[in-house]
Image (cartoon, rainbow, N blue to C red; front, top):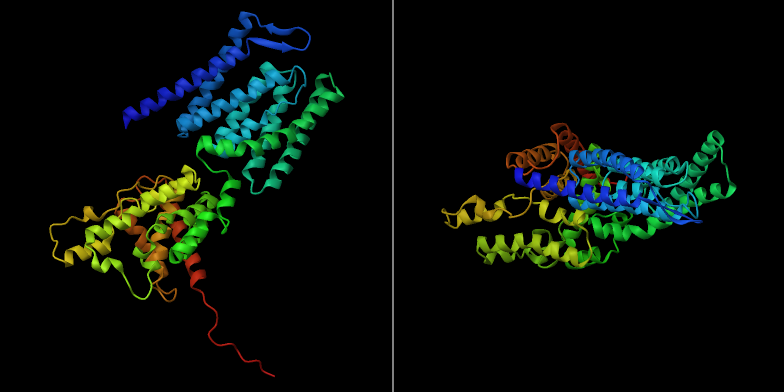
Length: 450
């Protein structure tokens, strides 16, 4: 574990060193419409390099503190360099048109809000070094608006509105700056304004590429996965209807719990929809899909039944990748069971006289939940299945309490970043949602008194 941490630190330092070298080299010259390439004096290059090193060092510390992966750090570094390159190329001919807020928006979407704000500061600093006067201030203001816009992104029209908001912010910053320091030009105001819609268009076009690079799904992609007409959900409904309805109930429970603790309710809901897609391969071996009381496990040895049941993890991952699911959604498949015990077959083995078998022989060989959302789906999965045996809501609180305590005692939540206070909120959200699910219509329609 310690060696792995040191290796990650070395990788992060390498990424930052490459970005520092690239930005320093980029700042070693200026493009001008009249003279072409203008080389910067060495003293100025060295000064820029020192300032960039300090800024990148702060970004690296934040990345390490927040646990940003190497993939996402490289993604962030690439966006920062892209923003600087666009500013270097575009600004000499069309000042203020370069879509600097693009980097902050994409980093906020795929890495996190804190890294998005830090990226915005760094991009604004670099653009100020490389661009015309006020370029950094405009980039900073537009970037803040872009960060706010993507945090509420839920449909394509939000991007269009965000582009207009960035345009307005850029225009106000340029107009105010020009009024203070002078040098107002109508064409520069136009280019600064057009940078907003350009940022929105590029953001819309780059979302699929960013998803592929980061292996994370954007909010728009998650909403698309919630569509019941998605091919994978249609296949689940056709092949394993019981699992399909179970998954939708798990999704509702997970969404409510995620909202209660401030986790990502959209991701948790999608995870609930797709966590059991591996059952499509052999649906008849799972209780919710069995009909007429026929259970194929009755004729199988417990060890073979365990192998068939646990195979739905591997088969689910393979199927999900075939249908283009990203890693942030795929992680729900191996993590929703963790290493929990399949008690039914363990008890069956003991009853059949296999006293030498160990309880560990009947555990899932999968991953423990590592995020709040995957831990929530693990809890919701077991609780939803157990709640089906309860006709009314009289024992729901006890059922939820026991289910969560069992997962804690079995060590299934030891890698999940959940506090006891959050578990209490999750418990209350589960109970409230289950009560709503169990609430039926009146048996007798009241008579109308004339």
